[in-house]
Image 1 (cartoon, rainbow, N blue to C red):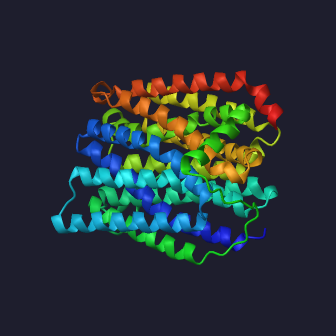
Image 2 (cartoon, one colour):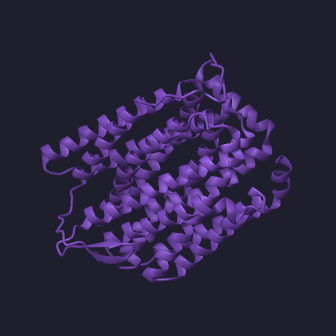
Length: 421
């Protein structure tokens, strides 16, 4: 592998910032749940998603037009500076008002919108084609190991440990260290610091492009049209790219919006249970990263995606019908396997079929489709009905129906997807 050291540095930088981002994105929904402000949080999430409908297509164009290392550096520097400023305001005021917490959510969310398309396009650019499967698996393992650490740290920082015990994977582990809960601005300060560490690591990165690109000189709208035109000519890739995103839509709506009220209002549990569930989710994703290509080695990628979509439909149905904490952990483990497994196979499929020249724009169009779906579900689940008593379970029932419908679409067009390979 020609750019092995560059890929390792990229993974290290992504891991360090990913841990702190993970802590923040666990802490924020629990903050709004604990404050009884889920409807406000839902509105913020919808507004953020609507803004992303404009931002995402252009972010994909930036990824294809500019140097991807420089994009990574600029984004980490800007986000780190903004979070540092907000954290310092929290220290100055003694606490952060809810709208500043919402602003951090928006900053991190917009960062995700360009960070991941840029990361995948960058990886594709510096990796030989024969290593695509391995590298996409390694990305997933690295990202989810970061999430395991993030979940462990969040469990510790959200509720503290005056008895010296820490909730790890649902078990109280005695560490003998008393830890006081951290305030939200202290968590944001940690997050800001890791952005700067990531910037310093990427600064050291040197690589030789494998997939050569030509610089396109047209305006952003003209360049964006190239991505649309490519997918119009390759409708099988367009349809697979959109339909295979359904598990990711369900996961984002669940982890960022549904899981916290499910734990608090339905399971009647505390923040450490919510954080532990994120650890199980990440553990399942790590398992998928190690084994998923072996498990489905005798099946086509579209068939593997269909199987995992149906499995996700079943687990959402179980979550809606159950009130058992350990079953919740088990379902989050399975959800982690299905989400990560689908993403690994999906990205490998798209790497093999979409030229690097237009990958960022094509990816942004897929991302745009799931944003529209997410806005719909978030608008629906922000209604006060879903936050009364255990009514959150109806949201899980609706998500299960969505996944079942998507599985039918994938089955119906299966032959078209396979013929493309």
